[in-house]
Length: 148
Figure 1 (cartoon, one colour):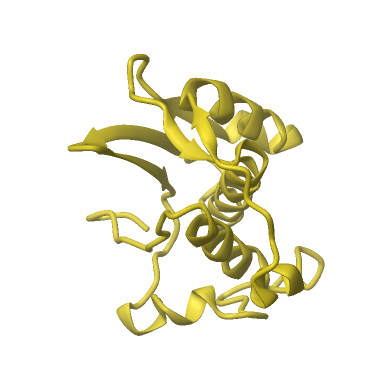
Figure 2 (tube, rainbow, N blue to C red):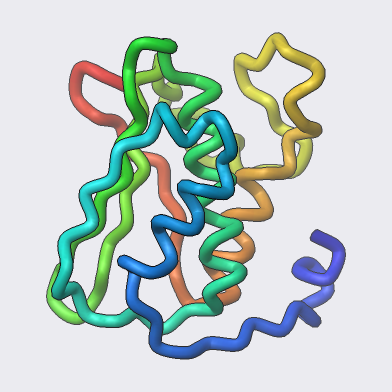
């Protein structure tokens, strides 16, 4: 996080296929991978990303989604093409965020709604947004109607 804030984090951007990165990120979740379902269609254009950084972003987002979803509800990771961009979504079935918390959740040391003091210090989403931006991407929260 300190290298990211100092602007010295080296992102080695290269064309990469999501169908290579997403399965590795899901596998990195360990036992929580059983709660994640993927829908990443073949044939999407390669994205320009640092594979290790993108994998870290996806692991952080999926772990957060698993932590905030009901145990019986899977987390879904999808990807789709929008013009010349590829959009990756991590969709959970958690309680959602009030609109006023959409930016705050990406600040350092934020653990909105967490009651478990053993699951981190609240840097995962801040780091994820910073890494996404270092690769030229964006990371935004969005409500899923009727869900989190």
